[in-house]
Image (cartoon, rainbow, N blue to C red; front, side):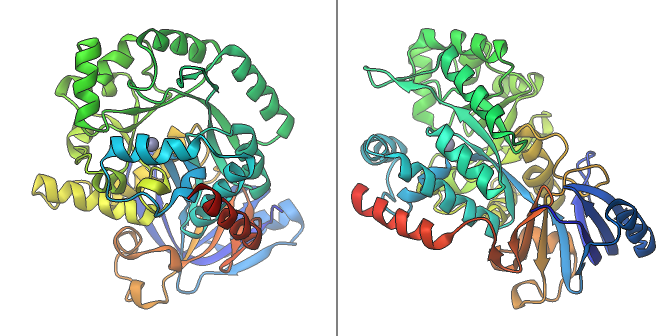
Length: 440
Ligand SMILES: [Zn+2]
């Protein structure tokens, strides 16, 4: 249920569209009908606005020792894959994917998609994330679960598996899913077209996919240059890099979200910058699968638009955006031998505002008047966060899920003082345990 709330006397940390974060102490934020109606230092003004809008029946949330921040938008995830957590580790990507994961995925049934997805949403909410790009099959099942949980998702349309084992998407799949989305009546879900990678489809498949995306004005979700093997095979098959192959097929534009981008040439970076592609950085997954270190500072210098993802829980093994922000910054500093690159403000902007924009939600990810109310409350009265010092540094470098006290999505508390309000964890635990036993 959407609530009218006065967030009272908080330390507000938010990024802005210039990419710079601000910290405002003793601040107030008024939320009504899912929208931020006031942000500033006057309690009187905030109360006046709320009284006009809802006749004074609002909750006052006390901000003593609390930070109010925008929630995270995870720009690359495979949400149902939490059912494969901790079962296939310490393997090379090709062995992991084709030897361990895909054979299990082939045996998944509807409830595996639903409860795997809900398990991930619960973990995401408890770690301050309110939005995710979900690149996975089972779109109808997971979309219904997302709407019921009150969670924002950019959901891929994946199509059908053909007899040769490859995936195919056609017009009917897109029309079907769009009609289904309309039926839900929810503004929390946006669709995108799945183009898995340059290695999963036949070579003549990419141009028709680009035409389909154009016809329906669909964003495209794709993995690019995750490993050196992918680049070598692409060079062998097509005589060019994965970025060049996808660009030549017409799949790269300002609505494309490209995960990984670990092994890029200078020309690749310039193509991604010119096409305004969103690059979703996945530091944990890239390190765990030994894919390498994506050169984010170089991409940033070249003007590539950057956001952050966790990848699936099978290759991470969690969905904690605090950890990804911290790793993104530390990985950049360590590999460039420069402690000034990818600073706290940069990674916070990538994890909040840019993630939402990449997922197609223009009016989310900032604490500013007129934005949708996707907010998290951090309790800094704990050893990990005390003494607070710089609140932005604390959020990026010290904070973790246990400090997240409440999460609001579109004006609805989905986590309220550490209690999930829209997901029944007992049910999720019961079904995911059954799934684990069947797919082990
Ligand atoms: Zn992925």
